[in-house]
Image (tube, rainbow, N blue to C red; front, side):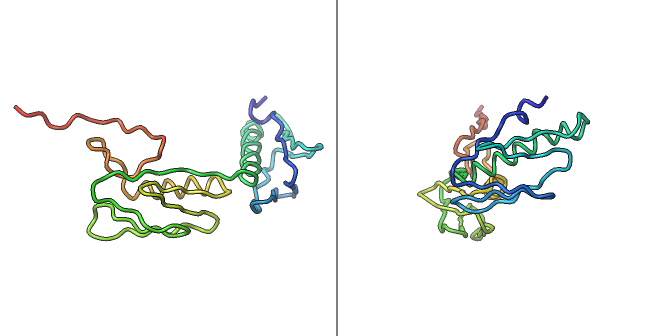
Length: 177
């Protein structure tokens, strides 16, 4: 039995879950998310809990059991609390401007780097920290990864864009004779 899949999902007050044949809709105060309903599992609502069960003990059903529960749990958590990732920009002369849906950054290139976030994801800039927030966990993580990939941190001086909780392993530079 899947350790993750067998756990029930607590549905807080104000959140409604609608189970359809091909998709599950989660609506709440922060918005609405649609999760695909996987073929080999069933989702049932019992009181204030959602329970995911698999139809048989096949290999695909076992794989989809934990996945369906994780997708549904992330949707409920996103609708109630939201998700956010923080990025730090380190480097002499590096600058970040903007917020909302667009960023304009000076990252040591000969030109300004512009980034447009997709709908549903907001960007806030505070000094040299970029906060990516939204209700969809996958979209927030994807936007944070795309911003980081514009200038990955290098191992000698640590210049670049890194996650706030990321540790950059530093290398020793050249040694003189």
